[in-house]
Length: 113
Image (cartoon, rainbow, N blue to C red; front, side):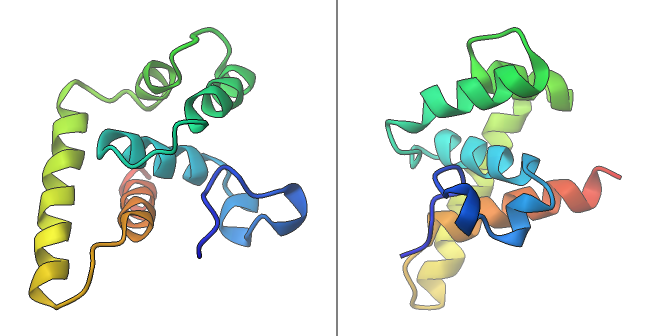
């Protein structure tokens, strides 16, 4: 079973997150938008975003503001999740929400420079 992006202890944080902790927040955002974020994560993510950017007790609002995302971002993530699920079904595999979230974070990082 894969480690959830924001639940790893500091000793077992993969280089993926050690090198860029924002990836974990981005992945968790995608998981939340598609309804796959574990119930205990919003409180942790609120603490993370408050420490990083201060202010808001709404971690998703803080991230959207920091990333300068508009209101369409959530709908685009949901649409991409539908497409991801269809592709998985077509290939005969179960859709992996963590793989989707990682792909979202990787795509964002690749296209934000």
